[in-house]
Every structure is written in structure tokens, then in C-alpha cells.
Length: 358
Image 1: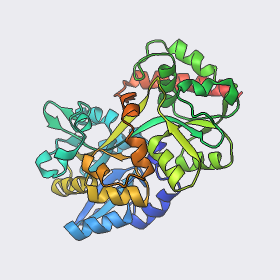
Image 2 (image 1 turned 180 degrees about the horizontal axis):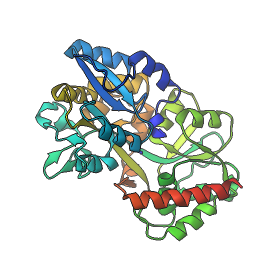
Image 3 (image 1 turned 135 degrees about the vertical axis):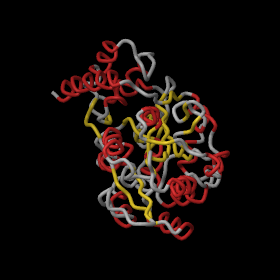
Image 4 (image 1 turned 30 degrees about the horizontal axis):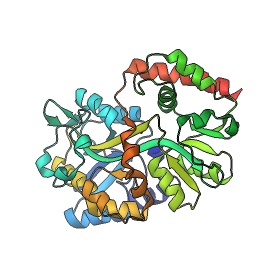
């Protein structure tokens, strides 16, 4: 849904290094709480861990993953090593189905009632009346553009195919994302398109358009600052940070045809040595106190907590982007995919990307 998961760009390494040491999962000390997440993605902020330790006496130690598959592998191969794990909602059902995470006693999450019902109660996070993930943050993937040079502001996904921007388009190198945009552009179900031949043809038509591909927020910012492209697929929270923190003239829009919505949840690993501490940490992570500091100091995706979002000043760029009710209506949220679908999208994108690069 860094990748988005390299969410903080160059800030990730700085804050992560200050916040925690990634040590062997088996080398945990008494009083430790072990968290598995993307590096630099909120839970390892030094000031947050200090505040949590002062409140609970628990020292939070992180271990990191670089893909959802690696996250699942770590949970499978190291049972009892982790307490809290960050899981994109499209993988929560798989993790619970494999017995990698455990049901959460939501009475221990004091902020539970103020979470967005559409995410809090989603079937992606809840199975058979049990909650396996607490909705944490969400965001949108749409089209970013150079507000100084792209006028008027685009409103359609077809801007990616507009001959006016030949050689000035940038895409994230991600199979599911590019297939989703091509599905949107061809009027298909973003998550489960039926006509992959049409999607392949639509993506092949980008050959005169694409200048380069990006993989991280930091890389995107460098390409943008160097004027390598005019329009690009991008994440909403990243667009807000690029504009606010990097002072880049970034415009952002969700196409009239639709955009991609995603949300992440925090879960408790099966056999967590400190399940109560895990619940307390999750409760802190979804609290307005944590979110305000994260959003205003660093820049963050939108919180799933209505009260947390309300604490931000109206001038906050992220609040403005994520507060666009009409744009939100145009979103289709990422759904769980089968292994066969992921393989098909990956194979298709590999073939298309090779052709685009020739």
C-alpha cells in the first residue's frame, strides 16, 4: 500500500537508528516489547518510544522487514519472538488464517471507539467476530504533478498517457500498483481485473511516456527536484511531506476515474510473550497524542482515529489532502489477492517493464 513502506525516505535511517536497535529476535530481555515493522514507519520514532517507556516501563525493540512476504516468513519461522506486527490490511486475513496472529481484546484499546468504522470493522481485519488487526493509518495512491508547470491541474488518470507529457512520466516500480492504474484506466475492477490483455496493451502504450521508475520516497523527491518528470503515480502522505518538508511544488489528485485506497493495521503476534504490553503499545500508536506529534514533526499518513485527525491544524497539507471527501469517494481499497493473481500481475509487469525500457 515503502515503497510506501520506505515511507520516511532518508529520515528513516536517522530516526530508526536513534530509536532502536534491530537485534536477533531470540535475544530479548525482560521488559522488552518486540515490534516487527517497516523501518522508519512511525513505531520506531525515538521520542515516541521514550514517552511509551516513561508511561509503561517497557523498552520497545524493533525488527524490520522489506516486504510483506518477508514479514510473513519472520512470523512463521520465529514463533514467540514478536509482540506487535504491522500488517497491511490485504494480508491480515492470510496471517490470521495461518495462525500467525491472535485475536485482540478490543476492550484494552481505549481508542477503539473513535476509529473510522469502515476500517475498524472491515472484514479484512475481523473474522468470525474476532478482531485480528487494529486500524492504524490509511492513505491514497493517486497522481502527483509539478504544480508550477502542469496547468491546469489534471483530473484524469489519462494524464499518464497524454502525448503532451511524452518522456515526462514517472511510475512506481510495483506490479500491483501499475496493474491497478491500468485497470482503472480501462474501466475494470482494480483488484480483480478480468481482461489482462487489455491491461497489458494499456501499459505498453506508456512506452513513449515513461521517463523513469521510482522505488522510494527519497528517490521520488530527488527525481522531482531534478525535473526528471512532470506527472507521476504517488502516495498522498508522501505528497504532503514532499510539499511541506522538501518544499517542492507538488500537486496531488485522485483521478475522476478512481484511485487506490489502502490501510494498515497493528496486530498481536501468536504466542506474543507480552500480549498486554502489545495492546498498550497499539493503543498508544492509535492515540491522538502520538499521531499529532508524528504528523506535525515528521509527516504521516492519515490516522484511522477520527479524533487524531481532528487535532491537526487546518493548515496541515496532509489534513487537506486526506480531508477531500469527494476524492475519498472515488477510492477503491486494495483487497486481498490470491497467490495466482500476484504471480500473474508480477509476470505481466515484468514483461511490460522490459519493453518500456528498450
